[in-house]
Amino acid sequence: MKKSIYFIIIGAILVIGAVVFLVYNSAQRSKEKEPQNNQKSNKEQVKNEDQKQFQGQTGREHQIPDFSIAYVELDSIIEHYSMTKDLTGELEVKMKKMESDLSNRERKLQANLNDFQNKATKGLETRSRLAEMEQQLAVENQNLMQLAERYRMEMAEEHSVMQRKIIQSIMDYLKEYNKEKGYKYILGNAFDAKILYADPSLNITADVLRGLNAQYKK
Image 1: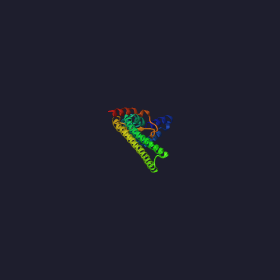
Image 2 (image 1 turned 60 degrees about the horizontal axis):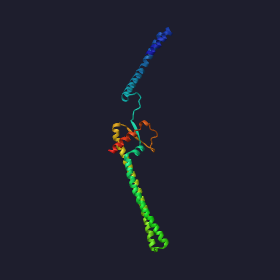
Image 3 (image 1 turned 180 degrees about the horizontal axis):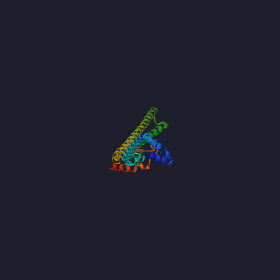
Image 4 (image 1 turned 90 degrees about the horizontal axis):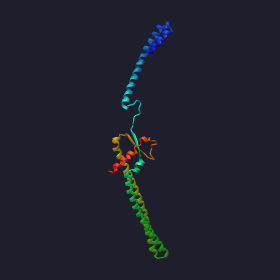
């Protein structure tokens, strides 16, 4: 309406003889545009209300919602976690015992083999006795290979169990840790992880590691 009146005044100044026509024409256009203007005004009012409501929820207009994401360097957590060091130490003790047992059995088998070769070369045993000794050596060698494989499988299983214990312990701690922090997601970044980039400001590794070790020592 203000624009229409403005145009009327300009028209009156420029063309005095067309004042009546311009006033009438302007009034007609104003009536036609009034519903559109009202509709536009209503839309702007709704938009303003939505913006006010959004501002009330976020504190800033057009703010991207804060999803409260953080991440930890999982490799570093596992490496410097006291539980990892303790369990790894226990596993190494078991492994050394197995290696020592295998080494002793291997040395004994090698001694028996040398004895067999010496007697066979010098003819110090009968052929039937040498056959028995050879068969016994084959059995001992087979048993040693089976024992080595059993030890290998046991160590692999022990290692897998150790890893599950460590990861479960970290996850349990993060649940308690997050009750105070309130993160929506805590991601685990590692060499083979799917995270291609992470802002260092979201890295909570040091904080988590301190709390994790403090809890473990209790």
